[in-house]
Image 1 (cartoon, helix red, strand yellow):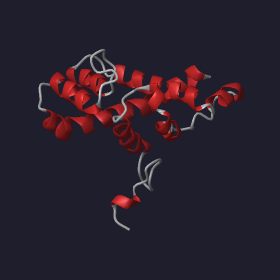
Image 2: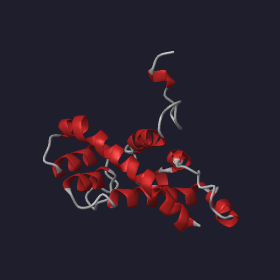
Image 3: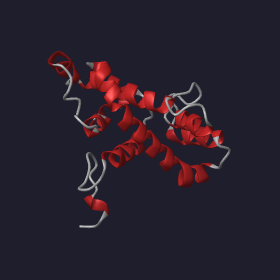
Image 4: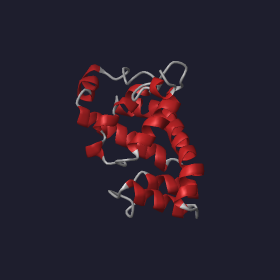
Length: 155
């Protein structure tokens, strides 16, 4: 089995930190952007968070089984993490990349990458090679850090 075939599509592989798995799934999520109607295949991101939302009361936990209610939690969690990055150019680029601005909402990934690259005044190829993965890992870490806030708010 090759090294690439050992990496799971969902979840983590042995020794992988959940932040790295979240970053990988955020990269996959870029295809659709932060559009709730398209987020059901990415609900495993919630499962990667410590506690798997098991700390919720029974009534909330039953609601959480509905994938579209869980999509709302996922979208809110990611959007809050993106917005919490501040107002710097990298934060603005992250908003463009995930479709959280008027000009990037519901746009194809190619257009969102161009808008993100424009925020930092770089070519798209430079953006993808040197900036995109760093921003995705920063956001994955922010999602990981914000998990407690969303667990408390949802309960």
